[in-house]
Amino acid sequence: MGFLSVVAAATAAWIFGAIWYGVVGKQWMAASGLTEESVNRSNPAPYIVSFLCALLVAGMMRHVLVTSGVETVGKGLLTGLGLGLFIAAPWGVTNVLFAQRDRALIWMDGVYPTVGMALMGVVLVLV
Image (cartoon, rainbow, N blue to C red; front, side, top):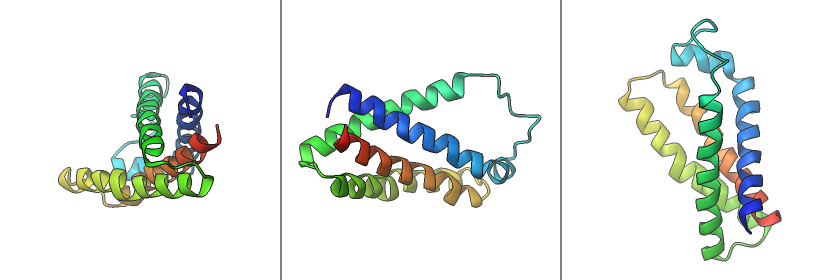
């Protein structure tokens, strides 16, 4: 596991996010209080920053996997799933509740780090 695996893992999770939010986009926008008119799709900053954040997460996941001795696809998947479901997603739940946002955001925004980190775990042990 090296730099290339981190970039590949971040890319896999980022692409999953694009697909996921493409599927739940209308529901997510409604729950977030956004409309097609209020979203500036020509602004590249959110896309760039989200990829940079995925790189940070993948880099830390690489460290966790290496120091934990995770070397198989199954263990990479399980570790990523656990980190997403039991570390990342609960922070999102906290943010949604304290911000008094629509609770539908909990599952929509919880799936992304959970599945994204599971994908990262798989890619990190494969590349």
